[in-house]
Image (cartoon, rainbow, N blue to C red; front, side, top):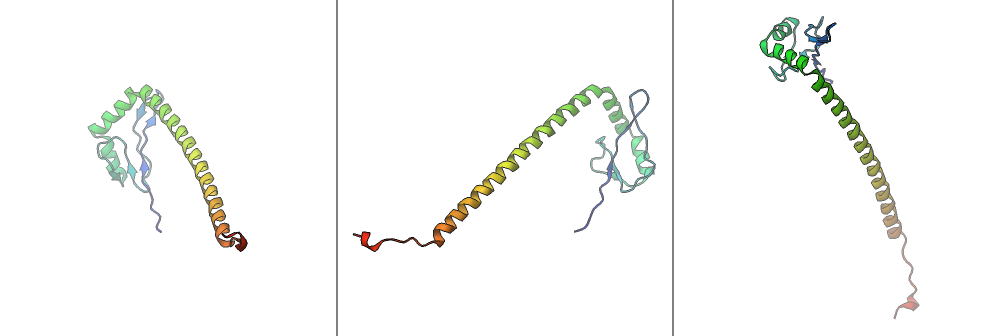
Length: 128
């Protein structure tokens, strides 16, 4: 089994005014992927390619969009965190139920095995 190194997801930085601004990473190790949507699933493997990308109009529009919708993004983040919390609880409950069902299955398998391994003794005098 080979290990694969995933590219980093680009996250714009916040300036002193609380606005998102582009800051190119000092170095790019395993590539970088931008979430602006202009080139979905494209991995930028050099700093110069990424700098060219962040100067595109599509990327600048994305930065402007997230700056204009901070409140909506914050609310969405809260909703997504609640969703993740609820899903973790559901998964935990399902795991507990699965363990319970496995224990029931083991019990029933043992019961069947015991009933088949022990011959039933019948009194031949009771047969009519």
